[in-house]
Structure formats: structure tokens, C-alpha cells
Length: 101
Image (cartoon, rainbow, N blue to C red):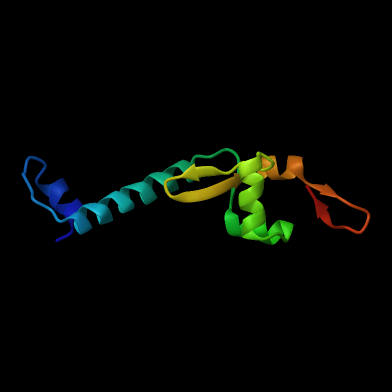
């Protein structure tokens, strides 16, 4: 039986759980919370991979831009996202059709 189901069915039950089971439950709760937040977002959030692909930059460049405040990341749980609005505001296209920040 899963820990989440056991807690739901027996809310007043005292349990001794392993650290592994507790960590799995915490991750499940964080992922569920992140999904709820993302589903309720008015602005679209892009993953690190989507931004790297759109801009044609490396993950190290994206990390550096975040550290320098050029393109700030938003963390939801353990996942990193970037605002599509912020990305479009920072992007400029040069004469050769390349993206510049």
C-alpha cells in the first residue's frame, strides 16, 4: 500500500516510515504542487531545455545569464523555468536573423 493512500484512509494513524518513503512522498507532493502552479499560471513558463533550444545557447550560458540577472529563472520545487514574457522582452534579432540578448 502506498504511503499517501494509507494516510488518506487512516488520518489518525501513527506511523514509522523510512526516510526513502518519506522522500518519495515529499517529491510526489512537490511535483503535484508544481503542476498545480503551472496549470494556474497566466504567463507561459518555459523549461531550461526549451530556452536553450530557442536561443541556441548552452546551459552554462543560461546559468550565467541567470546569475548576472540578464534572464532570471523561477524555481518551482526543484525545477527551473523562465518566463516567456521575460524571454521575449530580452530577445533582439540582428540583421542575419540571429537572436541576441
